[in-house]
Image (cartoon, rainbow, N blue to C red; front, side, top):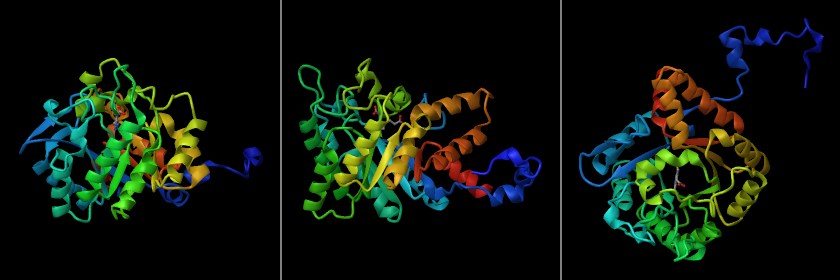
Length: 334
Ligand code: PBG
């Protein structure tokens, strides 16, 4: 590392002086190809509902989803990720609606694949949008989340998704052993091309609050937490163990979540494993930046782009973010 002790021979500001030399030494760039755009969907036709805790984010019906997909394709966003908000009457303790081939997600995926076969589709593998209690798995009579029973249901959910054309299944549930179980089931069915994006380092975070409003699991979850399966925010070595296990079990890509408060984890994972590594800029991060921008306290576009650059600098190969459309639009006009 050169040091600045040779001043005035070395003047760091020389290279920062003009836009051309700043461009020459820029280490990271943001492209639309780095983005994954999450969309909340609901039943019905021509329906859209704002998510109040996430300004600018809506739940849309499948017909309106096609317009969103079209814009993603036009802007070069490679992947769209779907999250369902289902009718409460369909929710049960075991979340079995997650395996219904005629459910909301399979219907949306078939429609997307019909109109935009080239657009990558990712779906969440977890039961919380489908359970009456808002947990990601089946709950026993003592209130514990059952690991192996839940994994069986997750395998069925992942197969249902893969069979209707999903390109990437994203287990975000944090049950032990589920990546291996899902991979084995996919292989057995001949679904050898389905990629697995493992939410390997997923923390028990308070930054998920607005998302739980969006999928409609917040009320059911109440004051309960997910501390017995999601990770303790105090830990980093544990994240590396989780990632190692998921890679060994057959994950193609790994995810760190939340994003900005966990960039140290992104960097450690990327340095240690050198596998495709993604970060999820979660709902609470989005809500914070939006709220500050709405108040005029922060410059919306500047903080949005800077936060994206922070992910790239930390080593992320891509970012799942509610800002994806805004970022891609901005890149196009820049
Ligand atoms: C559910 C899931 C959650 C998020 C994505 N998938 C919430 C949770 O674990 O409670 C959060 C995403 C966000 O906050 O944007 N398995």
